[in-house]
Image 1 (cartoon, helix red, strand yellow):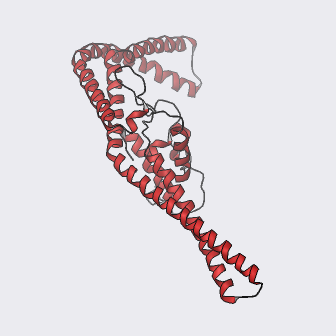
Image 2 (tube, helix red, strand yellow; image 1 turned 90 degrees about the horizontal axis):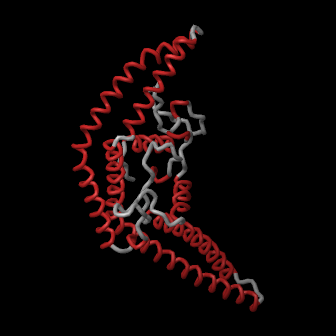
Image 3 (cartoon, rainbow, N blue to C red; image 1 turned 180 degrees about the horizontal axis):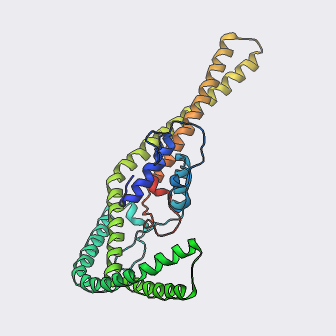
Amino acid sequence: GLFTDAEELEYYLREKAKMAGTLIIPESTSASSTTGKTVPTLKETYPHGISYALAENSIYELIEKIGSDETFGDLQNPDDGKQPKKGILINETKRKELLEKIMNKIKIEEDKLPNLKKEYEEKYKVYEAKVNEFKPAFNHFYEARLDNTLVENKFDEFKTKREAYMEEKKKLESCSYEQNTNLINKLKKQLTYLEDYVLRKDIADNEIKHFSFMEWKLKSEIYDLAQEIRKNENKLIVENKFDFSGVVELQVQKVLIIKKIEALKNVQNLLKNAKVKDDLYVPKVYKTGEKPEPYYLM
């Protein structure tokens, strides 16, 4: 897996620990060894309301569903803001071109930051002053609520100062420096996921080839065994006599074909997962308030 944010990594590690039954509760210093399904405490709940670890099969199923929508997630072409075409999955040149475009865009936006930072720092000083003005009213409001001693004029003062604080906060968030910083972080995340895809592409291709060959081989063996079983069954019926060695051979062949069918199912599942890994998808920027995506668990 690949993580460009500390909280993503923490989320992943907590999920994996839960699946392994070794999650350490914040209040405790020992790992949990219970195998039964336990209801997590509030401190064990993951971001955006996920309470239980997802099973590996569930993760692949969710990712396969997203992949079938023919989307690259949060990956965009910096030139027009649109998603790149599917050709980048098979065309190495197009992937390199997109990588270069993203790197150039990051450099352009980073060069703008020094000048934008001056405007941001000025706005931040005003914002900080509003925060300091708002804090006493904020503290008094919540203490008075608990003590049931809140009076109307203090409440009006709280609302006025809160509105002034929120207005300055919006101005700060809409500042070009803040927006550019967020854009750079988003571009860097896209770059990291794209670079990771470039590195694992060859491995994924080899896995797909290997499991495809194994699938073909097992299907051929199952077909040949099925033909042999049919032939031996017909032979026993035509001869109309009990042949102990023939019956034993037939039973062995039937057991063998069952095992090969089970092996085929496993290989087909591995092939499906390999194809899922071969997909390029960039999860949405973390902590956006949207539903978390299973790609964080890959």
